[in-house]
Image 1 (cartoon, rainbow, N blue to C red):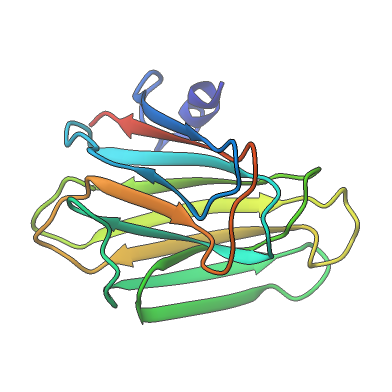
Image 2 (cartoon, rainbow, N blue to C red):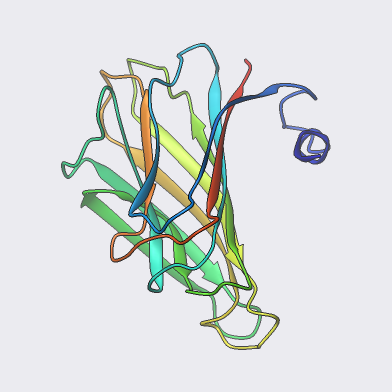
Length: 189
């Protein structure tokens, strides 16, 4: 279904350009979901996720690396967030220890926080790697900014010499809950 929707955009890769690489489904609350040994055979990557029952409201963050995740101050990110009723907000971070790729993920068992992140040119060894994302959550249209929102985000890993073969999604201040689910796709060139 997502392949069909994505293919409607004129700049999107062709239908059937997305290949499933791996999935992670959490059966107990945990601090992160991680993909390792990512093959360097695609042009780009896409991560699709749903987070349920977050222990605390927190931003969703990503760390990447080659062999292990980079925990140094080698990341930057930008966010724009709106809830449809108040003034949109924006934020940025540089020299950070992770990419903040979404706004607040609220703890709820009924309304999942969902996202789609693209990792562009992840296998390149001669430039920084960038990510872009769309994420959001609906708290049953409660009308409060803490319960529903949509975010547009971008991130940067400032390492030009290494391809990405490891990717970790986490909440810096708490755990993700049962039934949170993540899928990694390769996008053909």
